[in-house]
Length: 245
Length: 245
DNA sequence: CGTTGGGTTGATCGACCTCAATAAAAGTGG
DNA sequence: CCACTTTTATTGAGGTCGATCAACCCAACG
Image 1 (cartoon, chains in turn red, orange, brown, cyan):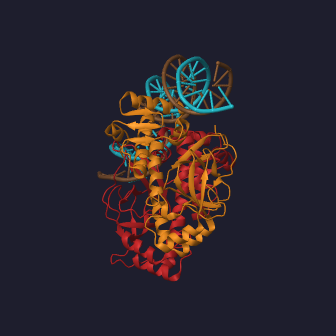
Image 2: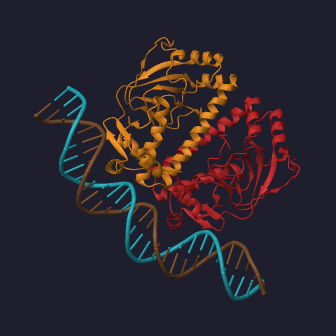
Image 3: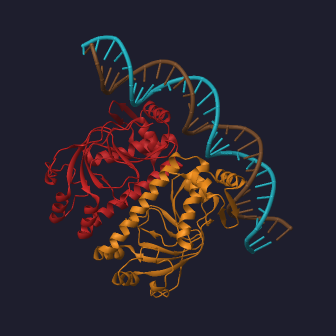
């Protein structure tokens, strides 16, 4: 079900640990944890940060291993999933630029994180980061607010998984993703899909085939157009109706 | 689908706002947010707290209304759910003694909270509580750790909703609930079920009938015994096998 | 007692899964 | 750039798990 990818050694932009891309040039700063930070907070984070680039389908960290780092995604996209012993997979989220991995700061990873495309991340040692939070309450507050948002999204996803039909699931997924891309690249009708149909299925509790059929149906109904890199939303009103809360 | 209960006015133990049951006598303190707090933090919380008792099937707060308060459950149990416009319902969690409602501190309620049984809660004005968090970083840290735990549980629930069979869903539900009761009353094989079969179904993405059938099946297989107030787990190993991660 | 609101059980149905074939991309090496 | 393989996506045919529809049980309660 899963290809585990090849070698796992990430390409480090800065072998000595010093960032070659400074926070001050960071494209996703406005979206990320780092927005609205005090200068001293940003500086402290910059000191801890290690900028790393991962290739496509590399593993950032694995389920139930000791959690060494937390991450801020600065480019690319990542799938977060849990595996059952028999191979069934549930994707619990997709991380896009600006997203933070490791909100819960737990000692073991609750899920595996694999890049969907080449991705660059800002990596922080977990313990040092946790200590920094205790020293900078304002940073902790910002992180907590992000955690609250995540929790809310997780509850929305429960509704989708538990009580929506296949068509509604796919429609809500596309709308939700477009909304997230809109924050990042401002696009209002495009929703790039860096993940496979299998990934979408494992996110929505569906099979590949059902995802494909529902995408085809939405395209036939002129609600979307399927493009090589994702979809274009033709009839947001129709999709909204399918995914309304 | 839902009976909205009768009058909504809660019974206040302390009409003047002063707690008749002090934090120092609180039975669930060890389990709750209030554990491991500094004396000054506890005192500040006590000042904000209003102890309130709700009857069975009363509403603590409703989805998408302005969030005025946050709550610490001290006795009884509460269902947390989201409704779709057409009446479909997803229960996103059950709150038991020691649980905190309002972790995300958002301005609008993300779900409705209704008591399953008579319940007593410790109620705090949301804004004042939020301000307190900014003044007491240690309290904020504690809250954030609880939020991280909640987030992790929510992701576990996604696996259950998305990738498990009906029998596995019910088995995981019973095991998860028993583990939570164990923290509260130390019972190791009993799992009281204050919620209806309908509630369990709406939590697991199943119908009442399917929940009932799976409970019967587990009982026939001698994995559980169904009692008037819940279940007794006869074969935890079997249930564990059905719910293993 | 009659009524009412769970809870259980049975019969049937259908949404989505499974299995299988094909098509379309995306690599890969010559 | 073109064969060739491999992976991913689509489409079809048929099966199944859980939903739906319906009957019945039973305890609580006026």
